[in-house]
Length: 153
Image 1 (tube, one colour):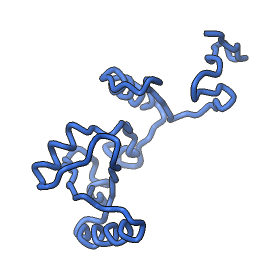
Image 2 (cartoon, one colour):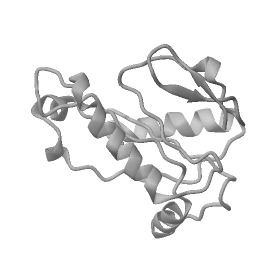
Image 3 (cartoon, one colour):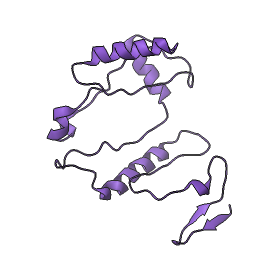
């Protein structure tokens, strides 16, 4: 693969597929790992975790050092896992790739109102909400500041 030289001593790959080196920008606090062929492989997750570890230098914590900025990893929809989870909740998912997943953060104690609002909005857009799953969390894993205002997922 032909490479373009840059002034700061490293090189970018040439334009290929969806990649365009002209769109590159420097940014502190961002990392990206993917297989361009779209295949799901565990090493992408491992690389994502390494990116988060490498970004720790950006000081993404407030006055409470136990409370971070919420940095995380975005992955493809884990169809097999969600199919199993949804089945235990009493509803089935369509085939892989024919549905979407929403991750909602709602104020604690107001989840039912949030669900009703989302259900109404979905109906207005001719969409169907198949079901709801509460994301398990460990509130002791975050700092006191975050625990005071943490949402429901």
